[in-house]
Amino acid sequence: MRTIFFYLFVIFFLNACIATDNPTVKGFGTPDITACGVVPAEDGYTYAPQRPPLFNARLRPDVFYIGWSQLDSRNDLRFPTSGYDPTTGINFEDKLFVSRELPDGTTRTWQLLPKRNVDCTDTDKIRIHSFDVAPDGKSLYVSMRQGTDTHLGIYNYNLNSHTFTKISLQNTTHFTTPTYIGDDPITGHPMLFVSKSVTDAEIPVNYRAVLKDEYDRQPTTLIHKMDAVTGDVFRIGFNNSHQQDPVLITHNGLKMVVFTQWEHQAKTNRFSLWKMQVDGSDNFTFFGQESAIDKSAKNLSQPREIKSGPYAGYMLMMQGSRNVANTMLNFAAEGDIVMTKRVNLDVRSERIVLETVSGVGINDNLARNPEHYNAESFVYAYRASKEFTYHIYIKDFLPLGQGTRKQLSPATNFYHFVQPRSYYPPQAAVNAPTNGALGQGRTSFTNTAL
Image (tube, rainbow, N blue to C red; front, top):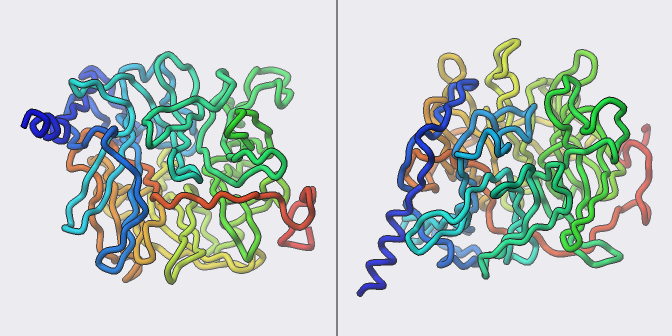
């Protein structure tokens, strides 16, 4: 009987305490967390991953996601490492959750990070940037900062032992947005693409120690390949400004990585989707103003591939739509959810809207972080307006833009729940460049004129 009461206590009274003196950032008009609250979640030690069950004719994968205690400083596409500095965020804490749909229509939720003491208090204060599922299905690759760390690092979190180990070696640069791209053909080690800030030792910069964007505000994050066993990294991306959100896809039988790139040259100032092979070759635009039928220059980011159903092979993405001239809202990391099917990369394709911003001052129906859920639906972060915190929702594709929406995250407003990732572990496979053993240095394999 004592065990039963303790179990119920763990489920319903996991305190999500945050210092009441936390500042509220006003930039996007977003409510940041300024008081303690209760998150109805079970202790992560009782969680065990499972293959997506099938009920009501649909697969129902577990969904992992982050609970951010603060959004505003992390809601600007131009500042991918902002909001993680311990000198400004030491009183904040983030959490990592996983939720599971049940056949009776209810949802079960666990808190995975940070770990908890027997009295249900957090053992550590952490800030989580991003994460992805490892190919073994038993662990997650997590970008986070813990304790006295000054920069974001890459960790492997084991879902069975509920322990994590640090993979990244450098402690003076940020490592973000990890994603598995395949096993190295020589070592056999799993390889990741990460977005990492760089120093003058990596790219010689005469007047500063860390490469920054054109306005010298933020460290520039570029795509690197990381050995998930040794932690060694090799830079394969180069740009004047940030590269983020890598994701491995298969396009017409060709393995490639799609990512977000800040295009900031002359009068051009936007975020678009780019692609490359695993050795950095075949680097070219994937989807943006030049490749969309409507020729829209709205920012695009957070790409994820639809893996099954009638829209298999389509690319989901966030489209910035809170545009107000000469304000930070132009670069808000929230807006519409759209998708497109890239068949011929030299031909424009249609963008299909699945969720769109509305309301006076374009502050309602805000969305971000789309992710494949099953053949009939996707999962994403959504909030009714800028006055609300984010929750995780499942939404049907059909009817397009009008599908049924169901909340998956716990019924609490003490966190911004963002970045859902469905539990479909990627298939472990050797992933060497194609069209030549080592790839080629030309601009594009898909456009023979280049």
